[in-house]
Image 1 (cartoon, rainbow, N blue to C red):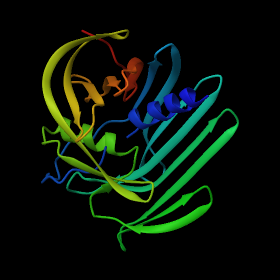
Image 2 (tube, rainbow, N blue to C red):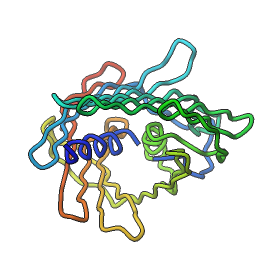
Image 3 (tube, rainbow, N blue to C red):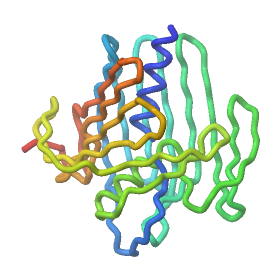
Image 4 (cartoon, rainbow, N blue to C red):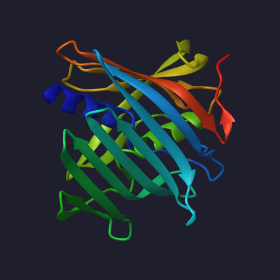
Length: 244
């Protein structure tokens, strides 16, 4: 049971989560386009299907939705956000809901940019914490990272409001390569997450020709356990994603 909980949490953390970078952008910066994507995730012998969707809401905000489920567990989360003229993403609301073997965990974060605070309501126990201007949530950071890649901006340190703390994710572009996944063969940008004082290794591949959509994620834990996530089906602006 502990292993199953770990796997579901790992998939959730990796597929849906990075933070705002401190960069100088222009009002003409290209924004990530709406998409729908299905991923197959595997941790040792266990498998989970996961879906992500980026869409526009009626109020003009964008929403990134993530869900993953197996016969034992279900995870669902979403982030609602706006874009500043500079091209910086600004989260407004984030929700996380997980049920594993009948036990649930729920969290709701509401951002107030006038006061630079975020209200955390975890398991119906609310509190408020101060944030910085470039703070993201655990889901929207991935869209900001893609924005930076699309506009050839440097990936730096991303700040994320998580668990009553400001955490920082650091990434480095390793280079480009041809990547073969079940969906096909793609030209990909390979990115590494930089961790200090940790033996955990995480690599991500993004599709150069498809709005830098996430193609694959691999992670190896310090105990040798390995899990991998691969794109199996996707569309961007209702156009089906295909390999070379």
